[in-house]
Amino acid sequence: MPAHVYILRCRDGSYYVGSTRDTLERRASEHNAGTFGGYTAARRPVVLAFSQPFDRIIDAIAAERRLKGWSRAKKEALMRGDYDVLRALARGRNRSKKTPHPELVEG
Image (cartoon, rainbow, N blue to C red):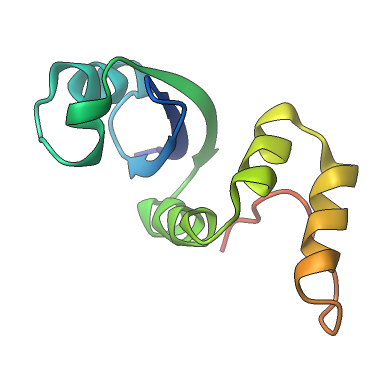
């Protein structure tokens, strides 16, 4: 069953990162309905700003964990598809490591 990592833009301008096996439309609807409470419940409505499919849920969860650690600027560069800025932000944070590939890589 396919899975997705996704970023929601909340009413207050903040971002929420999650993963799901469900359809993105249904998951966004659940966030907007406040079905599970939590972070987005007080920040509705939310809008799907980014998603990436994965073959396995464990890969989507790994991508979610990575994205949750990213700065707002890196998330926005990813959502825009601006990989040059994403690379520059990755280098600026830790110049001693190799620059990671700008796209989230499965497995």
